[in-house]
Length: 620
Image (cartoon, rainbow, N blue to C red; front, side, top):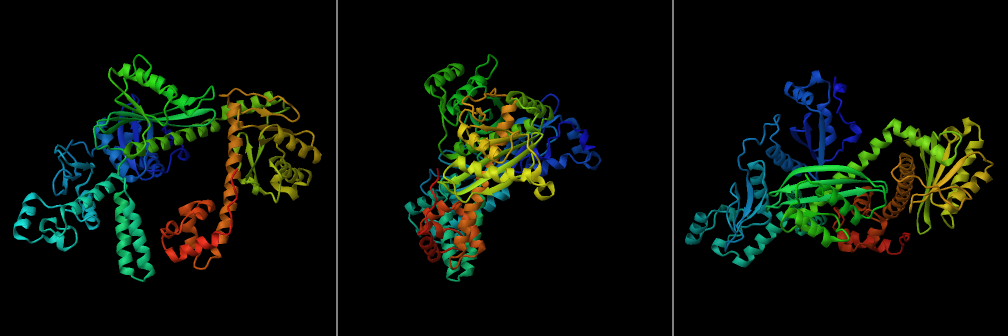
């Protein structure tokens, strides 16, 4: 059965993002590369009962000993990365792309006096800008057909263009609006070049203003009840948005670079590394570093580079090393890398374009790896048991705290105060027992903590049939904060008549543990499982409090918006999706609000006028 596959990852560990996955054999060789719009759905299909799989698939999963994946931004990127890695690794269970043929590109002859856009499999011509490769000829030709409707530039051959010049008659493409006909001087050379630049900018991803312009025209057409025009513009917008999902995993030049990104918390950092050679991603690595000391981002970068390139058997660095931020002694690190390579190395932070987009993709992979690492560590029964025992010993508790409750407070400038309570039993979250507390008024966080604990602790003194799960007695209370917060919690325990319950505060600055009426904190080892557990519980309480506070603000602004004439539930939802918060919506201009689908300038002006009299609470 499927359970016999020891390397099978837990379903919850697999992301639902688009991406590329690789099955590896016992020697680490890549035996199969595949792509997926949803990695979790696709990979789960390989781990069905073996007798339900096709023969070739069954042989592949029985040969495999591991599977890993790389997240990308879109299904189109996944297709391109799959293409690159099949060519790179030549996996035995793959069939597609192994013929080593050339693949089509979209090309623009920017060096010509009258530039031409065309599809080609040849990348050797000078003065030509290439986009691609595409894995299907029909896909790029369909894209070109759409682009010519928006950017009507020349696409004919030299012979056809010359014949039109001599006869003074344009071809059919000019008659149907897919060419501006520079051959018969309907537009001059400079106007045609402007159209060419607009198409190149769009395909390069640096200019998406045309989509915004089309959206504005679509909205105006709908308001004027010109529905056929609005539908046509809608279709053009959808087409351009599809095309604009360009690849960030294929570069137009012969780039040789190692690109690094990381995601970290106070105890660990997950590193994602993309290896780019010849303009293609030839490999991806990922690993997790336990942070024995607190390190800044710049220090982490230096640490990562030293470990990747510092060994005797490590490969030398490429021409470019791209990092999320420069180390403090960037010049010395650059000189060291150049010495290892034997020629100059450029160490820099990508700011824009394809490399910046790939950096964001690498960061997304690192974030997923860190989340997965923390989840696996928390779900390790042995580690949880040892962590609870260590907490018991360090805090001098009579028994291990099998039930832990943690409290945090969130607000904006003292308004909209919400407190959270999260519950962990045996080191795992019990989300059905989480609670939120609305605080009417409070001068500071210590008073908010006191009020919250008083409301929670009163249930311990009620009969269980009246208090339900609130009657469960925690072995340890945690509050987010330092000495003032933990003393407020201790005061709530005393006023509730409870004298045998432990309470601690976990301060975020140095991750120290504070006990009531004690001027000296308890310090746990930074990489220890016990601190990792307390930190995870505290962070979950913080996340839950922030979420509750945002929901409260969102509900308030949604109610306020729904009272504006012309705004229904769908338009309110569209505004909140577009701007994300009341603060951003209040700061938006009439033009920015009018860009939201189905909201024109008249309604946008009404929204600005209605919101101008209500101030957004100031964030701390």
